[in-house]
Length: 115
Image 1 (cartoon, rainbow, N blue to C red):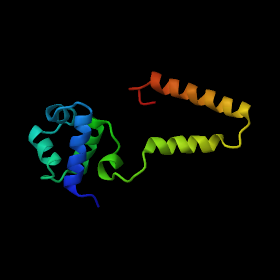
Image 2: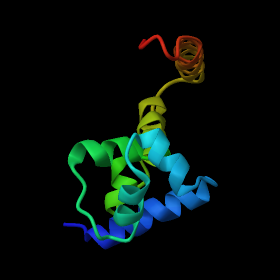
Image 3: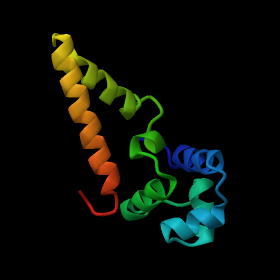
Image 4: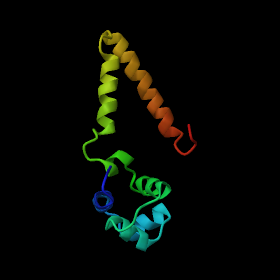
């Protein structure tokens, strides 16, 4: 189990790396400024709902805040995608990549519409 002071420190580090003030994080996460300070100093246990709001406001995954030894999710997806292409002919790989590019474009064009 992660130490709350370590999580608070990671939250502060993520906030600072994004050039965000405590006030901006409080506003984005819809929590009070004193609560942000207490969280970052490890003086306050967060409810799960608050933790989720903070992670979303910082645009980070929960595992990045809880544990440093969890592999980067993005890297896992890249590895999984590479394994899907393994054994495909060049033509099949090209078709799969074109399909994925179209899906990505569709998702990006519909952001905010909950596609």
